[in-house]
Image 1 (tube, helix red, strand yellow):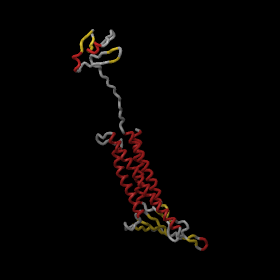
Image 2 (image 1 turned 135 degrees about the vertical axis):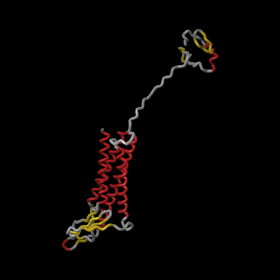
Image 3 (image 1 turned 90 degrees about the vertical axis):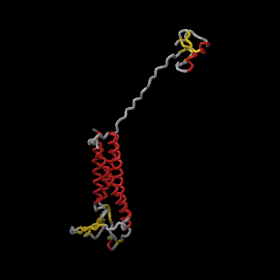
Image 4 (image 1 turned 90 degrees about the horizontal axis):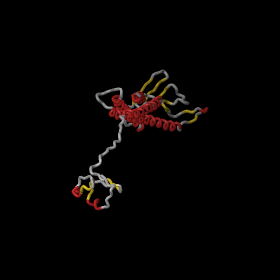
Length: 261
């Protein structure tokens, strides 16, 4: 029961995380215009991975897509690639984890196969979450760099009012959604990996001790131990003497009355 609950919890958390990564990728508010000390408030600009938008004070919003691929910054293309890879890996891991759920029976699938599928989906969830976090972090680092570079172009006008030469952008809501979604996907993958241990069947190894019966015609002496199996070529040298089995060498040695078979 605990394994099923742990597996279901990991699946649900990962599902929410993948949905958040998809939502963050499609959102337009990756970077929003910094309104601090901005004298122009009639127009508000914000940008996403796929298009940039302008919202006027009247409520009218106009968006324009990026109709070029080679003209985009390399960092933006890298962020796109990371988010897409995270979504693809997350979708595949969701499909695998559905068949790996213990509460779902497909034919005669054993628990060992489900354990391997659960571990695979958990690892893929972790990679997907890391891709989402890395993509959002790279874009945030690009925003910070451009913000301080544009801040260097400010000048002070009359009356001490600070005016900016160019529009500065700050963090948008999509970045925070991407960070939270990537973290949830990562946590869900870890929970799935933990649930995998409970699905592995326990192997009981019993250490057996084999006992072998001693051979026939084993001679015991008080001075030591000497055994003869009686199945070799030297059996022709044995003679029956005094009710015991002794070889010629033993007979020539100092016999004792304590010798027995």
